[in-house]
Image (cartoon, rainbow, N blue to C red; front, side):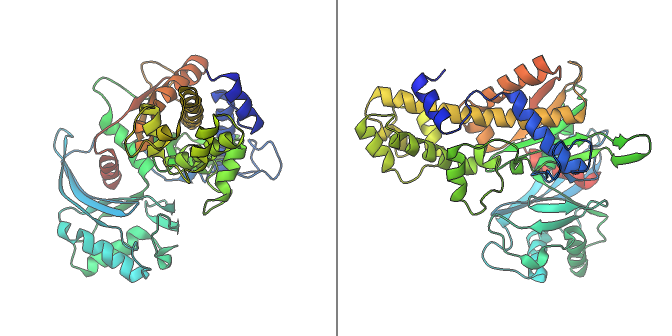
Length: 442
């Protein structure tokens, strides 16, 4: 546990070191239910309150069985890279991935028209022409999913420039472009995002003999998000508000979690102030910058020796790699050891370690709250024989110092010991690819 000097520092800056996963979960759950059922529903406790999370309906459920004797083209677009391949399931449901290709994402270099955008996508997958009549398309940008499985982009991020595509049905438009190029009639192009792909991969990752009662898809990398299976919900006996389906939370947009002085300072320097409030507390894109704000403030408050304070104030910036480098090796001297080199005494080194560990710990609490809220919302996991399978992905989740073990500890204490909900964290090689393939074949 951190010493009183550090605890007092965090308290002065409205950073609640002792916040419980239980209270965080209740805040995330409240925001989820506002987004799902609306501010006029019975869930709303404050008139006029609105959700931060989008709670996107997908009209989709995992299949009851693994796909068999089928092939599907898989497209993964969500950053600077555009990946495509062919996935084939044999008679036993075992899969092979072939014809893999990685190219650049259309719209990265310049603004593209709608015609140019879909023409470039078709160029990227022309080598797979007529190798399958279905496409699973993991399109990890903000979009609305239609009941027939198509996706309507709401906005582009990650430097993609294609404003004419906003509001356009991606699957239908791509199918029209492929038909012009002589492709056989496409039976289906299914759009989904990466958290849904994660969730659907749970069906493939299931160990022999394990019967999961439900699934959650979770990604903690550059950003943070989750998807879960929402059961049907009705008011009274007639009005069904939500049918059973996978729901994407856009968890990073939750705005019901208290922010510290450090969070507010970071937020002012981002491109989207006041948006993605929870993501800015715990995702890989922001953790390094947040650590910088905390250490600079600590140096200004005189927490360290004079020389260490001077060195920290001269840093200019930090990234998560540098933070992790220090936590894994506090005495390192390589090019990533920015923080270690700034320390002039072991006492300062220990204080900084404790400060950064508290930031990782808060990240773990927030992640555990998102996962707990998602599991609670499924209504499942009430038997140790039928846990909820949580498919996890993301560099921040797997590589940040002690983060995964902290998340699991908080889930064990709150979700299982306190709430009686059983879970299992799962991982699977090629998870996004396989989940997207499952969507294309459903």
